[in-house]
Image (tube, rainbow, N blue to C red; front, side):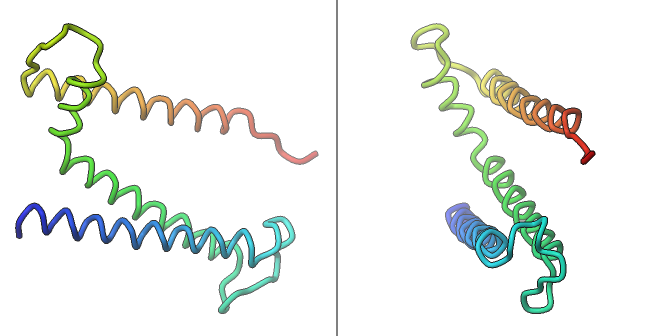
Length: 129
C-alpha cells in the first residue's frame, strides 16, 4: 500500500471517528437531560452512562488515530518546527537527529501541560457536602 493511500484511509477514518464523537456528544448534550437528572432515561436501551462510555471510547479511537497521523508525518512536523517556528540561528540546516529532539521536546512539554491540568483537576475536585 502506498503512503498516499495509507494517509487517505487514515484521514477518512479520522473523519468518521470525529463525526461519531461529535454525534455522541450532541446526543448527550441535546437529547438527554443534564447528567445529574438523567437517571432512568434511556435511548435505544442505553443509559446516559453507557452513552458517555461510548463517547469516551470514540474519543480514544480519535486520539489514537491522531497519534498515528502524527507518527506518519513526524519528519515533516519536526522540519516545520525547526525551519519555521524555531527562532534560533538564521538559515541553519538542522539534521534529522536535532529535528527529532526538538519535536520530542515539544511533545514532552505538551504532554506535561496535559498531565498538570489533569492533576490540578484531580486535586481540586470537591465532594458534595
